View (cartoon, rainbow, N blue to C red):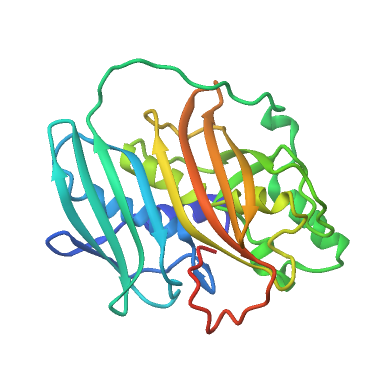
Length: 302
């Protein structure tokens, strides 16, 4: 499957069915490995909330919690609660359910376009994306060094929904302690519709990628490390500008602390011309103790 086909598969995730007033469902193919990918349920929850917004308000903040592992083989039902509709702001909460149990919930605030005071931080000075190798090439090189085929590690070797070009060269085989940050240029392969709710949902989807690496960099492990369990506990995003994701943008992530089996990471997302378009934070469960994932009740976004 080529990258454009994979992108279409991701955009298809946003096609929720209306089953009742303020109730929506997803019955298609889920994305993930063993557990539903957190970016999927975040993006779908945003889409569900947008379906109840009747005025020209746009999401500006999104706060969420992963409660239980999502089952890859089961449909998801989204319940939207219209908390408030005002002249400038609207608020929604969304609960995602499987088998009558909540797997995820979030609160989303929407705002009409308004003018006000402005300032922003500068984009980090990093090499241009054209001068960097893409993520797929780094992973293929790691497989070759291990004398393994793509079929041996299908999730590691699979084609991504987007093209990613990391600024800091990843070390998958022998991870060492590194500074707790990660910068990656990202670009979609194919056209993303200009509708802002689709653009925001797509950015939410991909924002769940890379945060874990920044939290693990400083302790010298990665997602291939044996007997290491990682999962997203919560995730928040703030949208600062109207989005146009049909081009390169920079995802700059840092992790101030990892402690008590939790890693904290924050990300800033910049357009190529240096505009800060969104910010996000994530709290990750990261434990060196082996666990049986088939019985664990820990939430998982990966």
